[in-house]
Image: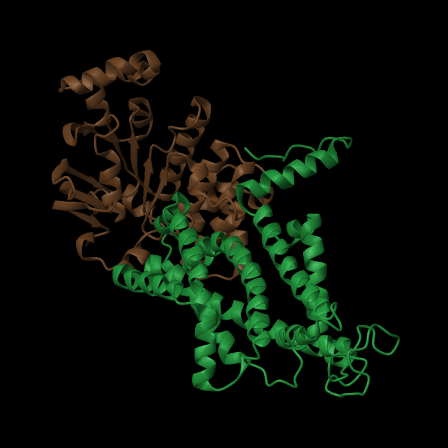
Length: 292
Length: 295
């Protein structure tokens, strides 16, 4: 994994070592998102600050506004959705006034994302390696051969066995877990400081999901990547995040350090989520911490 | 795609015919056994050793005239197709990206062009700009360009909404990158089909115009002109229009065959077809090893 931290120009050390709380790389302040067509507010005020090397989790059921909040941070809200109040700052810059050229420069290089259903996020007609190399070539301005070499290094860094072989394959030749690794490689290719994982492990089976979560945790430790983990699954968030937001119908019903929220849920909805998940093994995360 | 087209028998036949026609267009005038403009006393002769396809009403060698005239037909149809491609496909792709105003204007323009009858328009333009096949073909190309506009716009729309384009945008792709990498691949197969089809249509248009004597000064030989010149002497030589007619027919048929072959091998249906053929071919062979994977 040392190769990866060298490849990614992310300042990990200062942020984790320094005593002062470092400046947040992504700060979301009371963001409200409305559907202009239906003229109703979908997300009623989400706030969090994310410093390098930290992870924030957003939990909630379908339609609770998790994905919209992420898309707002990426500047890719669907047509006629708008941020109507609050502000989002990426690396100290308010995103409200960004031109599309500035967005293009920012995406990939500073903020990036991976989503559910990795197969449809890769072009089936282009070899997957070339799609990773393309990001490196355009974003870092390196030559084709060098981009290819770096892409293979990245594929190795996301724990793909035989990266040279995978480089030349098409998306339909790879399994879901491999595709998600390729997508993560593409997402971190230009060395972003923030990675949004929106239901990134939902479509994968449990063991592969655990591997991908481990990979994300590794990246975060090695490179100081700041993570936003969006999931309907509390267990995923518990495994990875320092802070949790519980979203219900666009409302943050509970927010705080993961441990605190999981152990001492204040809101009945959070309690319900935890109760539902205990049978799926969430107690695994609860039990050892209760001893501590 | 080229390899997959050639894997189909119909694709092979079409390509062979079109290569032959292209060969005629390049070398035809050199291959012509006699001067295509030289008249002789031997008028309206049948097939003979000296005149393989006989002679016309002025005693000119039909084979030489056909060979000599092939260049105009091929050049003309290529002019139509390439003009249509540039005039149609470029705004077709851009209409998705350059905003509502551009989209609206180009859509209305395309509708307008469809409404204009291109043969009449070509005749009108020649009347206006002087007799010449090139200006007629350029105008015709512009008039058939809505086909390319529609086809490339439809393909671009379907890509623009796809998730992999969204992924590229999140990775920091500019519009140029998206068009170059993702749209282009999707637009290419339908455009190739439209191009092959339009070349066939181009042959028909060139032949129609030259049949009417438009675009080319009479003594110069053309396929359409040959078809027309002997029509008056059908009673004495009923087979006369056969040679140019068959040539035009085969060429257009080959273009349509090629268009069909390209359509068959591109897209989902194409993959299924090719796989089906492959499976049949492999039935007795050893099964191919499954693609090896990584993690």
